[in-house]
Structure formats: structure tokens, C-alpha cells
Amino acid sequence: MKNNRTLKHVIETALQGLFGLLPIVITVVVILWLYRKIDQLVGWVFEMVGFIPQNHQFLWTLVVLILFGVLLYFMGHLVQTRTGSLIQNLMGKIPGYKTIKDMINIFNSSKKGEHRVLVVAIKGFTMEGYNIGLMYSQKESIIKGHYTVTLSMSPIPNGGFMFEVPQENIYVIEDATFDDNLQYLLSMGVKSLTEVLKTEPHAIDNFTPLTKWIERSKKHQE
Image: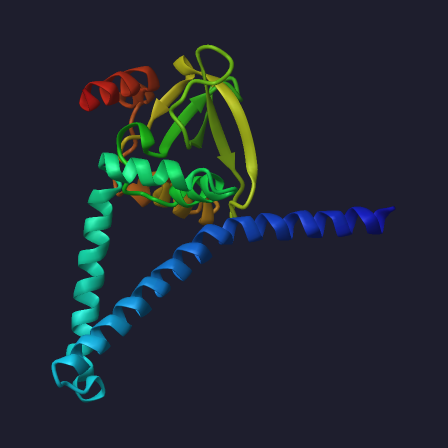
């Protein structure tokens, strides 16, 4: 019986690690695939104009990197347009696409407004203390007036606990990002969040209440 529990624990932990790495692996694979396609295209153009790519390796690599950067820039603009939304809606019909997209978005620190992953301080698990957690979504919980906050494990945040927290008990740490919180977790508290953010400690009243943050975010979108 004990061996079965151990095996189950090992399998569950391994699966958590797999799903944690999956978004990173998929992102790397897509980037490498795009880079190779551009590399092949530039090589073909060089040959068409009479250049031997192998004799102009530096120029070849430079052109590939520039085109790759330009492509990513235009793709970034495209996803913000109606055309980009239409494409994503069509892709969303592919089984598993939305789940993978949501997992990858967790690691995207460039998201803004209602799509941003928030680092928050929550009250309620101790009489006077606070916990620092993450809000992956700013959508209201199934429980009215509550929002889902995730408290990750330390030092390896491959698991954690989800809580439905009253909105009046949630404060947004505006300067903190997903990456900052990850660094804080990996340090096991040896490095305080003030050190990670390179700031001074603040009274809880100086942080933005979640309700105020959401109202301000909606105004920016109008």
C-alpha cells in the first residue's frame, strides 16, 4: 500500500513538472521553427541574387535576425486587431489550444490591464498577517464578491493552493510582476519582495485595493 502511494506521488509530481515545462517547450519549438523557415528563405534569396550564403555567414545571420524581429513585431500588432481575434477564435476550436495558450500566457509578463497576472497581498489566513499570491484572472469568482487567488509552493512553484478571497481582502502590489514573484518564491524568503523590487516596505494602506484596480483598468479600456 505504501509503495502504491509513493508511486502515485512520484507520477503526480512528474506530471506537474511536465505541464509546467510544456508551455516553455512549445514556445521554444515554435520560435525555432519560425527561425529555421526565415533562415531557409534568406538563404534562397541570397542564392537568387548570386550570393553564396556560406561565404557571407555574418550578413546571413544578421538579416535572419532582423527579419525575425520584424515578424514578431508585426505578429504582436496582429493579435491586437480584429483579424488577430478572428484567427485566435478559429484556433480556439482546436482541442487543447485554449488550455495551452492560457498556460503560456501565465509566463507572459508583457500583458496589461485585465489580462495581466497580478501579484497580490491577501488577508484572512492569519489573525493579523498577509499572504502574497497571484491572480491569473481578474474575473469574479462563482462566489459573488470573491476572486480566485493562487498561493504557490516554495522553492519550486510546481503546485499550490487556490482560494476564493473576498475582494475587500485583496491588495494589488502594482510594481510586482509574475517574474518578481517567481524570484521571491525560489529564494524561499531569503530574499524579501522588497529586495526583489528594490523598494522600501509600505503600509498595507499604500497598496491598491483590488476593487479600485479593476475600476481603473476598465476606464483605461474605454
